Length: 217
Image (cartoon, rainbow, N blue to C red; front, side, top):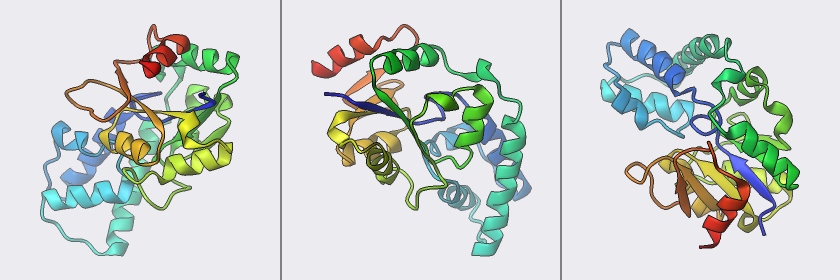
């Protein structure tokens, strides 16, 4: 029996990856580091400080903790300025219809994201009211692939992981969900993702009943 669904934010509900890429690329350039879209793919589902560590390693640049905090803050301020103009047009196709189906079926909806900007993003795109529980980067101490973000969501919902579906577009997120004992739906392609119970290309045309049938197979 499925009683709740936990959704990642970036790449599942809304695509803000381009804004993260622009902000990280700008920061990297200021340090003389080349940062490509291929590099950016490795940051999917990864926390801010871990992402900064990765970027610094690309240029073999070393910074102390206080310098890293300033760099991370500057990146985040740039990112926030980029997403401030987000509207409901940024919602990925099919998500809102799928959320409506879940609500009609009495299924709880939660967010499980490493982003510390999840709440303003949800407010800007008009979806915050759909969520019964929000767990984001402000609540966690360990980033995916650690299952903490999903475990905290399950605890807040008071529902065991086996009765929850996690929706993820990043390998780190899928690994986190499976480690935590959750059902997992990967949003993307088999070339990029593995280990999910099922894969879907996106939510457009997807019904909750069809999804449950796929999970049972």
